Length: 110
Length: 111
Image 1 (cartoon, each protein chain N blue to C red):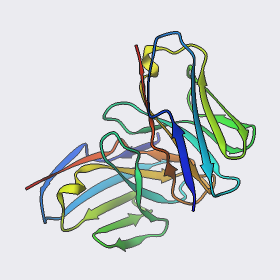
Image 2: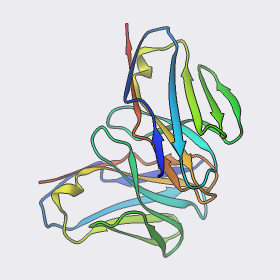
Image 3: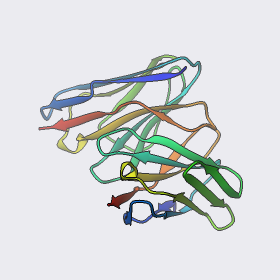
């Protein structure tokens, strides 16, 4: 089957670190993307991995292992504004055919 | 710079009425265009995508249709809305291998 699995919800305190895992089984792979979506708004792009390894962008980092069908998004120095849903998405072909996970709701508490 | 416009932002329509949502992209040529639907608390479901004018691929059988009359215009339509068509509809564009850029979304409530 074709699945993208990520936890439903995670809670962490302000200033802490949270790691959101994503596993995937898809027909075709052309990159793994992470998006942030605040309630009622459109998703915004955070990071992108096409090769194995870690990509760092400020407080956000994303890791990919293609052989394991696994990625994670690491959020450091959490801020209240990071409370949002984080979507894992696989680009399945060169035409940008994305398949999205259901999203992980991150709740940051004071 | 590239921008994507989607309208309207919210819409309340009675069951059985028609639907037309429009999306336009500025600042790029030959984008790939997409319509997604997101049910409350769920992920994004790809409905349609288009790699060129007049080219539409449907991902799931449904009560909706899409058209691309111009390079940077993508329209989502229905002749008769169902209650199950309620949701958050998002238009997006990519250049293929790049990240997707989303419009502001349309919150559709069918009553």
